[in-house]
Image (cartoon, rainbow, N blue to C red):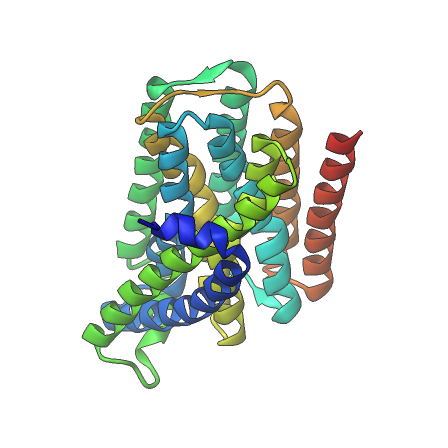
Length: 325
């Protein structure tokens, strides 16, 4: 009997095309549903982006990593996490800024991005100095995730916070019914998950046929494939005039990848660090700092988005040349 995965692998070009279409529709539903829920609950779009949308668009990474670790493909899993974070900042944020000059709230500059930088530094330091990530490290990272979630919840509830003040603006304008918003949010998540899986299978099948290693596949092909939900969601959010949702999605997704997807994956098995892990960690830390620098004037200009996109392209080209040498 032909399984879903086998069919998708045999028809990988069709899988790529259908996957991209599902990602587009899913991203549109996710944004519309998230905006409707935010308006009804008085929650800012930044908060929705940091939590609900970020978790939703990180679902493909979580599903892939758990399966990869269970099957003993730890390098693919760790490559996907670090590669996705690099792609989110270089590819996703870069494209979003080029399409629509992204205003960034002071909350992101002063608090959310520094939290991301701190988490990136800690996870990178651990990954560089240990030979294997185990369940114990998973509990540490998950504890950091709980602290970040508590912080976001506290900011969202505080009447004096910038996030809470911004939420008041969401009560104006036409709003979808709350139930419809929830259905669109869940439907968008399902479409993103299915679309991400189809796109991922098609991309991995094509890459494997070319004889590319697990780590490189994880950092490049799989990372881009599983980051497509973030790309679509960010672009749609930017075009619809919701920059906080777009930026919050990127920052939140990177935190979810390191502090939720990675530790959950470690509960299904340990991950051995490849000898060249330092290269990928340096790239992730560097592009995180550069992206944060671009937000300090509370907007990411199209030219800065072009720089982020160019840096990501340079990273991929350098990686291919290095591995081909």
